[in-house]
Length: 279
Image 1 (spheres, rainbow, N blue to C red):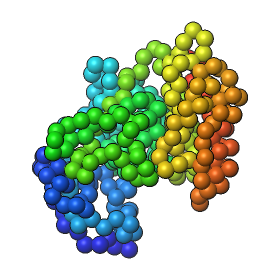
Image 2 (cartoon, rainbow, N blue to C red):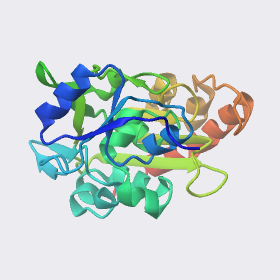
Image 3 (cartoon, rainbow, N blue to C red):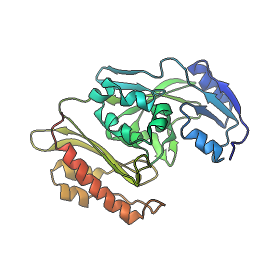
């Protein structure tokens, strides 16, 4: 299929992109386009205007400042995957990126696009929640930061205002006490996960603290399993699995019951990773 007709405008500045978004009710931003182009071609999306933000300066940065890792929205997955800064200071993101689709898609897809699209089976939204990160956005009223826990509101919906551009993400830089875990189950490598889990914790003298478990592929958004988090802090993996407060629905991948079982399998695997010493 071919997309419905649309106008195209290449934004020359961030403020111009914001103004164009605010002046057109059904305008869409074009960054990597790996999800957008597919929905256009299937006519699941039919905007009247595409605003190309590729080339806007400063939106492909990767840096560490004041204990936070900052990754610009136009950073390509491949760029983040090969970044020493991400590998050292945001190892959960580095561990998750190879699971995203295939190299051709990672070469073009952007960090910001993945977060803004908010696919409930995508890896990066879950990582951002597990890390307790935040989203940077810029609109007519200036810039603001939104906590990841508050950002993903429903299926493919976020807390971004209609005239806001997602400009980057920030996550706490890893320390010697940081523990991370990541695993997913997919029918084929590169497919969306049937179930996935991104997790972080802090090591303490006995066990773990500040455990954050973000499951993906089991609801309309990535979901924190808070009861399981509390149980895992006690060091009892069996109790954590029993406390999994998830209610996945049936889909084309698996039944809800199968997904719930797989979530328990992944929790055991990821719990083992969290309990290992960080290299």
